[in-house]
Image (cartoon, rainbow over all chains, first blue to last red; front, side):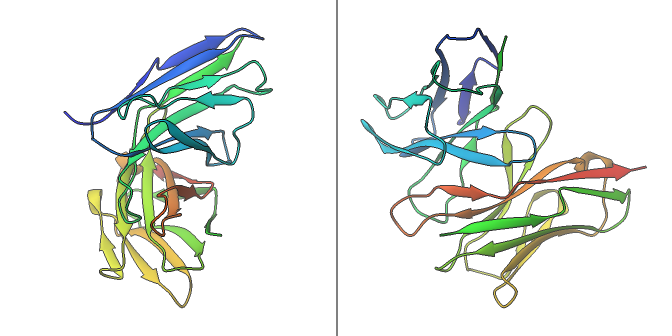
Length: 113
Length: 115
């Protein structure tokens, strides 16, 4: 089945640690995205990538980093510089045409302990 | 820049009643608009999308939405609510225009369905 796989589903991080969230898609989509979801704030774009080895900052990129070494993969690292990392993180992918919808993974819930 | 506003962060209806979730958009170009649904601790699932082919768009699970350019609205409706419709609903506009396909989301509306 085609789709987007995020792992892990739940992740706990200690203060000062970096953690990496995995996102893999087999939809052959060029574009991939990372969103952060907080209660009452909807989804906010962290980073996006339109092509391998290239990515752009979204609205809230500070404290996060990404890579796009393969078309299928777009991992997100939450660094120790991110002041409030506890949130639900969603990965998505889409075609490059504006009328194509984005497909979402099941999300990773990150909690700082 | 494109944006969407969802009026009402919480909506409660009785089972069998009409569901109306409001979305207004702002866009400098003809927009592509989407409605997504999210169940607790899950990702988003597409309900329907408007891509200028028809102003009344039918989606999954009996939902539909009407694009009204004069009102800059794209409200989501369902004639008769079911308990399984209880979820959070997001309206989104595509930041397309050929270069990217980023989605800009509203803040969501949590739908409760009372028995």
